Length: 206
Image: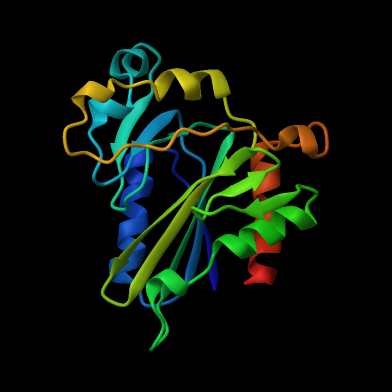
């Protein structure tokens, strides 16, 4: 599996990169990136129902849509994004491909008591620290997730405060208690430094 660290922090560009890796390459890739402040909504969501657009506009928070399903997530410089883009083995269903477990295993090796939840999220105690989503194109799978390292949790809560009455047929996000993992890690370690440590552990666990 090849490791790619995106040089970009633009959420729309990194969403496009994920899709490009899925549709234009044939090898297995682990893509890692850190976005500037943004809300990224799922493919079937109504933006106004999930996002406080006025708050985002006032604080320079971009809004982007990804090709996978699932709920809306907040990104900033304290959030790590990981994406596995792989070929689905013959005779294997996409839903049976498990990339949450290697990430959780890597986190445990780094000192975070991480477990996989019932929705393929990663939890530490009662808090969600990583949400995931996936998309299949032909025999290629994109499985990607967020990881809250040192994100602005106040902005996260305020940005993801949409108007549910405007949802229509859009898919609703699932509210959950979230937490950063930085308090559990060495003091002074940046998000970028932790990303590099985590990448080595994930690749050895895959």
